[in-house]
Length: 169
Image 1 (cartoon, rainbow, N blue to C red):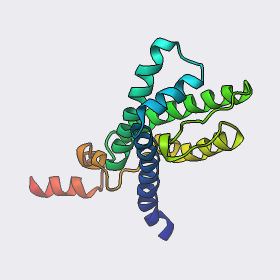
Image 2: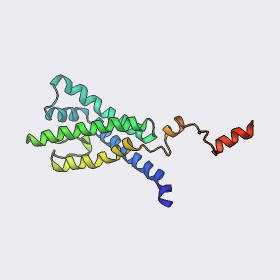
Image 3: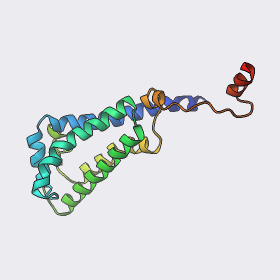
Image 4: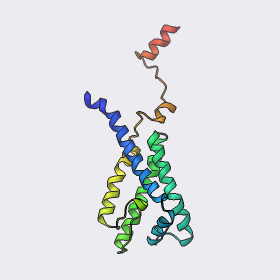
């Protein structure tokens, strides 16, 4: 019974871990947007005209995902965006690695410099797990979702809510 009581707390820890990952990644890129723009270009995936808009928007999307997860607002939707981004990052790194490109992954902007390769791919898989867990089972404890989207009590036979309704009539 004790382990069931710990599940909401564990969910909050996982949600906040996912939030921290996205916030650190986004802030690291915002600290030097020009450098991140150059890193995006090194992947040679986007048409030149789309590199700048992508490079300048992505860090702010990551920060928004992190903020939404931190406060627990639209948790599943934020996690879905995060999962799509993580798959996109893994595909970009995988193709660069397969093509033999030697480049800085740009994953955390100025906060970390790491070459694209097995280590960066495995790290991103590991860092994506908390976000994937929030997509599968969003943590509602200590979240705005729980406050804003509270489920109404059901009036099932024998429920306390039904007994209160009967007592009031």
